[in-house]
Image (tube, rainbow, N blue to C red; front, top):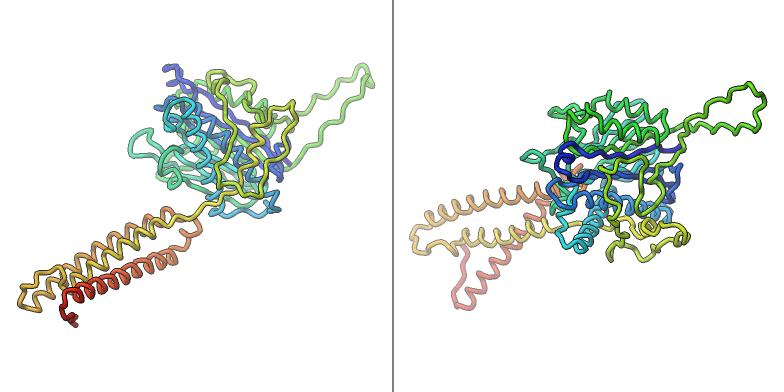
Length: 483
């Protein structure tokens, strides 16, 4: 049982005319449950990026983001093995969100480092990011920006994991460098046996998806790739897919760069044909043709700093001179118990990959900024609300108690509406920034926020009475509260 996979990119015709490089990039690694790269690994990690067309170094950013994601996630799997964690049961979406958030943070750090070397802004390396981690029993995926991921489980229809989300203007999307990248990041965990994965940049959306109010996969396209990868070797399918991406029918439908990450889980291993003895038993016998090997590894499975797929058009490749720096996760990300694995043999250039073992499962701290804002705002509202009710800021020249109370009540009602509006907005923001598990229980989240609101109002009222009492004490004024 093993994964067969390919990753291909082709430059769009619009980029050909402008003489700009292909800004897409995709890659993958196959690993075992220890996180070690092996040709017959039953776990696959893949990533796809689409560089921002207006950014000078987005082609470099795409490649750097993909390599960083693969290294960090490989390190995470090694850490799980070291800690004795079992990968058989699916991880929760909340935990997957934390893991992918760590990937995004490391990508941003690598962009900052690369930007310093190139004397540019990290935004000059902007790109989208799609990542998939698939085992035989579950799949976890994330997406920032446009593009699409389609999967199929045995005896099931194709699933589009995330609906396309476009910005207000054409070609507008979110990149990993955006300040709201983590807020817009979408995460899915799919349990059950996994069989087929197709991830792509938005260049193929019009061909592969039925664009509607709720987009759906176009089955004939995915059937074509699925059946081809089932019967062909990886190298044969890579060549065929590369030719298809550069074909005239495809270019007539899109002038953008095109990228495909294609994975098929072979659940039945065909034993290799035993070698035919030499010489042949019969001079007239015709040897049987060699079966297509399903064990042929992807070129990029070998952890080399600059993998080269063959054949691969030079137009769509990131320049070989671009060095991808070794991942050095920042302090606080790595538990002290995790150490770098033993170095690779001196003859192998695997140092870039081995450093990924330093990456470990994220320890993302929950953000309580919205709760703090809500509490402070309601404290201030409580002070002002009570001051209105007790006539601290209302003209004391009113002779009529009823008139003063009416004005106080009207102002208090206006303030109440404002408080409810602000608190409602903060509640919606809390839902957006909450984990998927928290969002599933909105009632509990609502009660949690209401407690914070009421607590703030109570503290605000208490502060007002203390201020009011202190002012009365220091001015030697007898204090009487109207009841």
